[in-house]
Image (cartoon, rainbow, N blue to C red):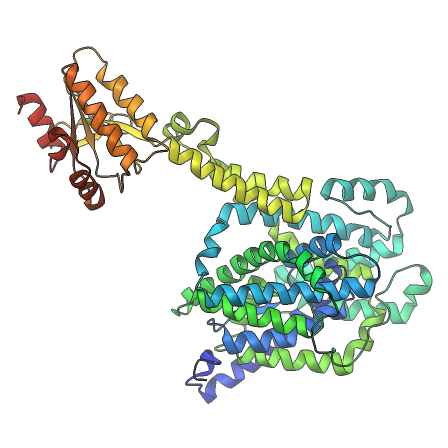
Length: 560
């Protein structure tokens, strides 16, 4: 059992004060956010609190990060609402049970993936896709919370449907609700800027409860949370059928990808600052255990939180004892304090959600993806010259138009298609000799370099395989067709691999060009390329690979 609670090994007494303070600070942020994120998932606010204690304890037992805080989060809560909404029908009780069942299926999938050492799954969602997905998701969440802020009904659907319903209902706006919600939002945002150590969400919730009780806001048309069950949650497998679990299976994979990518990113960020290491497979096991604990505690999907991890680290946490303390304080809240939240205005919860996700609308990152462009990329890839921006935009628009889970898979699909497109159109640079030192450099990038009469030197900046062999063959043919050309040299230093299709293409091309009096020479091959060429039975011209471009050029000019 030595591998349980790894962060507590070698614990020092002097760390206790910092961990205790950090745990209390995390609790102050977690409680209002857990209540708010549960409303995003479409369940009672207390379900968010149910999920937290078991998730925090089990992650501390099995996870590899000293600082990561797990709990309900906006992105996975919205995914939960979308998946359960499609799979569940009937009563609210069944919807709640399905929400807990989704947490169990996601946890089981993560645990299995960790045991099978599938930590590389995080790479299936690129950073631009995840960024575009989260921006679209944040906008959709804000659109869904604004009706509560205005005291109107709102409507279901995607971002545009929700926005349209809000605009149509604005005539019924409750001024008092707007005052409460906007005031709470202002408190949180101002404190975040001027006093970031103060738990603004908890303060806004406390003020909202106090004002609602003092002025009977419910009697004046302000919606409040209402009855919240006190006491510990019921433990056990959710009351769902095998068919229900089957309906949740496909969606669980999407939730797992998002939860794992977001949590692993947070864990790695703070591990690097503390010069620690994070094991991706152990993170999957920790996430799986946390998800199972949350689901079996009548809770909802959980994952690692960047914002709460930042709070934890900034408060001085040294180990996962801070998470255990936050779990204990959440249990105290469930036993003794839930009655206080019954008078909490829903507009305040909406303000907490909006304040939490507004920073996720990171348009500046999308702009930075757009700016990653060069003329050379444009010539090679055309419309895909900004692949990261295209992938991020596809994910964002997918969420805004088609909803959360389809948007995620649209973004991943767009990313994979762009990867295939780019790999089929490799960058091929023509090189020239640099006067003075004899080195070879790109004619486009180095204006001092000069072409060599009668020779063309090409550098292929990618592996050569079946998908791009035809494009490379066409480029070499065009170069060989230039008037007076007697040889084409391929600089293979930036070619990490070749496959059988590419070798056959090169061999056939060398024979074809040789019949026209043009030699095809290779220079500077790397290990895998060299091995494949030697075993593939190519002609003598390609079997002899020159150690440098200069050697190949000299051989071509001398006819040796």
